[in-house]
Image 1 (spheres, one colour):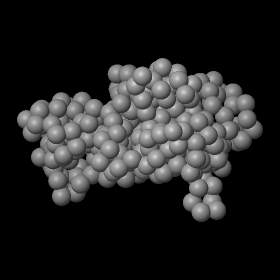
Image 2 (cartoon, one colour):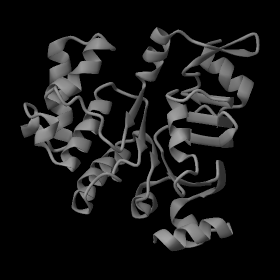
Image 3 (cartoon, helix red, strand yellow):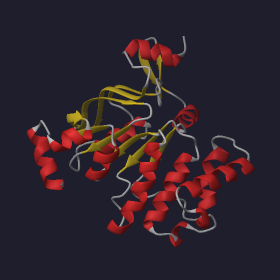
Image 4 (cartoon, helix red, strand yellow):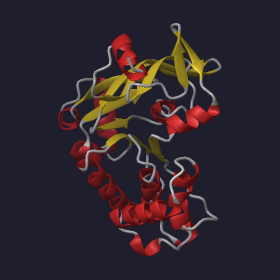
Length: 267
């Protein structure tokens, strides 16, 4: 039995679950930021996470790709641990080389773009495929050209990030994440640093990705996007999931008073 199959059987993970979290906790000293998160994101679906600042949304996202180590609980991506291995019923940290290999399957788009300022757009896109995947230069460049066309930036390959608008930089960041052929894409408030007039161009790229079947976990304040594109909506507050459901239904008729209060302030 493969490690994936063993984990699915041991933890009762559905065969189509791309992200599976059970009892996920994260503490910084005495401060408990995540207090037992249970969530499942099926492959090919879009999960949108909303909630007030400090509710643990971004921390949970960073736990998925092991940018944050868990304080407790189980977190699997495509049936496998990212930063741990399970041996004799106990979790052990993996070596950094193996962590990097596993993390390569999880794309992440940050609110602040995080592009390499000294590299051109093309160089930003091919850096990880060359260094992490060992992809030949010609293949990496050809793929990058396809991805730049996909996000509407074919004419920007030789530009540097400082020569682009915020919306263009974020679209480059999305293309860079896609260059690694990820199994899942994580978005940490990808439009929050953008001028309002630039938000639409980034959301359109994300809509196209969702339509193509990309598994996505999106922390966002864009309630309209969540309503239109999301398959499930998760509302977090004070480190717990308060409510979850079908976005249109949950936004129109939230069951929790806390969800109702939050949506009344952002809609």
